[in-house]
Image 1 (cartoon, rainbow, N blue to C red):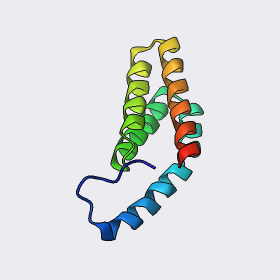
Image 2: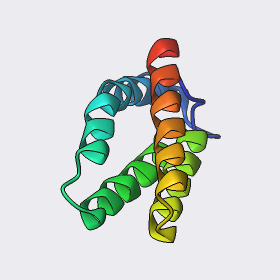
Image 3: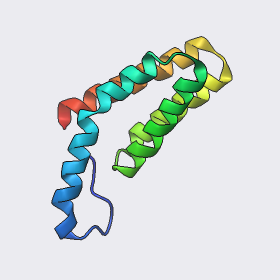
Amino acid sequence: MANLPEGMAPAFAAQFLKIQKTFVAGLPQRLQDIQKAPDANARHVALHRLAGAAGGYGFAALSVLAREAMEAQQSGADLLSEAALQRLAQAIAEIRLTG
């Protein structure tokens, strides 16, 4: 799992870890939603939501990758966008394995 937020009271740590696990369990669905988005706007929204949620749940690196995928998509360069999505998928797989 990702690190707990700095300064988190021990009483909340167990609850936060439970929420983190729920987030991690939902990552495959989020990835599928991104990959199968019906259009660029829907993909952008899904990536934006992932970037925000990942950061909030302590997965800063995943948040950065989601933002990079958003930027690659906005650039219009299909190869960059595909590479960014592959990095995102790999990161999600690694999180799932270590979670």
